[in-house]
Amino acid sequence: MEAIAIDILPAQKNERAETGWNPEVGRSRFRDDVWDLTDLTPDWVQDHRRKIDFTAVAEPGLREVWRHYAYWKLGRVKASTVTSMRSSILRLFGYCTVMGADRLSDLDEHDILGLPLWLSSCGIEPATQVHVLQVADEIIRIGQLRGWDVPESVNMAAVKARPEWPKGDPPHKKTKVIPDDTMERVLECALMEEDAINKSLIIILSQTGLRASEVVTIERGCIEQAPAGMHTMEVLISKTVKQGPTPHRILVNSLVVDAVRELEKRNPASEGPLFVRPVRGKVKRMTASDVANRLKSFCLRWSITDADGKPAIHPHMFRTTFVRSLVMQGIPLAFIMEHYAHVSIDMTAHYLQLSREDLRSAWGKAILSPDSTIAGKRARQIRAAVAKELKARAEESVEDVIASLADSMSFNPLPTGVCLYDLRRGPCSKGESCFFYNCPNYVTEKRFYPVLKRELDLIEEEMSRLKALGREREWQRQYAKRAHLEPLVRDLEEKINGQ
Image 1 (tube, helix red, strand yellow):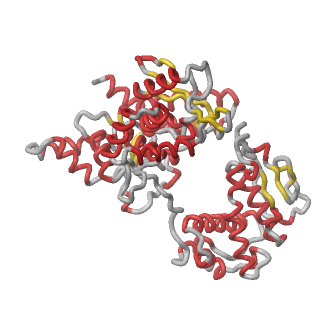
Image 2: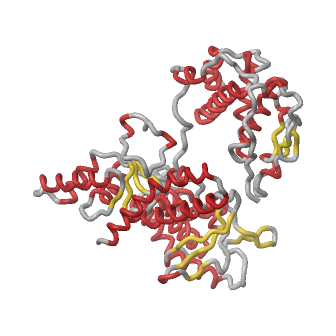
Image 3: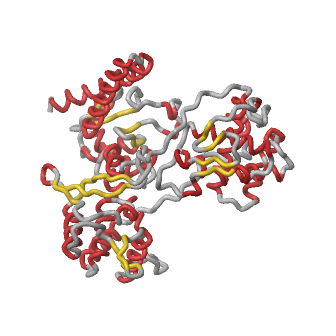
């Protein structure tokens, strides 16, 4: 079952005064003390993330604000996301209690500015603090527009500009990349490993970048022959557009194919999981924890350890390392997103452990090389500048000139190209509203042509559908997108066909 977003109309300014307003929310009603959101969540979501218990807050005024905020949020994000915000909301309301406020509207600007200090004094982690502050900001801003019982005179834009209010997004713990020499050692030892399970696990993790929880879903018969002598492997991907575990096929190399074939020979059953373990006399599928424990033992046995004698790697490091290697090889992010069935570019970007030097090297060669095929509003300007520089520095090698030019530029990877905007100049004026294709900072090249062409085809199909339905306004939006994308696709086509 897929997550469902509630489509609601904008509330009126006097929303809080409409005491008779009591719409359905999942299996419950708005004014119920507990909302059962089971029908709005996928089957795999845990039970405690299917409900919202408003009785956790004693004060009726705060409880009412929570209801309105949760209902508003349900129209914009997954139900499980709304239920997971419980701890941040309870911390915010806990601060209200400390301040002697039975209602959020009892707080003034000075009180709101004291929230970050109070969170710090409670020993709350910085990342959690930022989440609480983001919730507080959203509740007050949206509440002022929709008439909730929130401080009406507090200007949150001014509050967030004050030095007392932390800046930026929550810090994320980035998984480290496995160093090249360590990876070579791991693969060398894996190929000598006598335990077929360990050997296969390490090869598949390192050569696919799958999560440990996804690798253990591999079953007999998962490998299929693909065109051009290639192979695909079916796994269950856990975090996808469809929200739940979904069958997904990925391209795999010969190392993975051989590893799977070896496991199938050692376990000749006709069907079932390949990675299993005995549990109380029964054979059950291995878990991600089992994989982590096996990798830990493998590292200790082969002395693949850090300075403290602890295992130098853990399963998720293979994923980060694999994505980085793909980007450094010039694989478009759109293809990486497809490989992992990622919901958004943000999910893919989380694994991009690339330094500025890495980005400059990879994109400098792709865009600035004399034989590169690029498109974009500045493509001609870039080609002319490169040609002029190469002519002026004829005594130097082409590689050195390109490296020098790349060193003076900024490269920000996008799903279908790169943004050349220099973030050292401050935030881009277009922010998250940038459509890429109509921006002078956007450049793409021929490797992205299949993705761009497919996107153009989909837009044209959608335009035909909307025209048949008579939905003129939506058709106009798609028309505007096509107007910017089509010249890029045609430009690449002409250059590719002219080579």
